[in-house]
Length: 220
Image 1 (tube, helix red, strand yellow):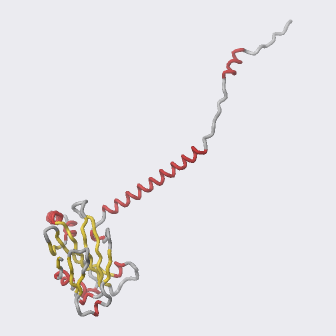
Image 2: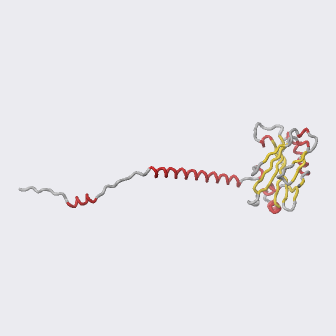
Image 3: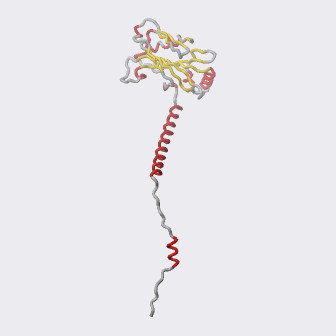
């Protein structure tokens, strides 16, 4: 009996012939470097946005009593002022006024600068602060730990001053604190002062001379 010879299926051969190998190519090194660079760039961008946001928050909470300035300047008067019998004139070319400093004030300093207005984001208010040296200064190199601000004089536009006064009358106490007490005015600006609170005992005598400083205010 003749044996049947198995033959390969033509269909199977055709299927195998039609199949093509799938080649999986690895990503190019350039692609990987680009992805790493993209991740680093996004991280840096996120950190920058976070820092910018925190800066804006701190600026929005800035108040006159914090003492931050746009263009700070600290000037020291003559040394050993307490030994001088004559008064001294506080003059500064960037200020529109002068003050006469009585001889009993001792070592004194002043700082000028600008601060953002409370009533108009487009405005900046100029101020000058008078400091006297503390006799019992704490062990710190910080200027404000060694000296006490006894008087602040601020400059407002006339329109800004009216808004501050109106806000104060409506029990907006922040406006009252910012405005202070009017000390002088001209056609365009109003000048006002605020005295320091909580004067330390070792400079009580100097603090009592603040009224003389205020009385000596003179527009140039």
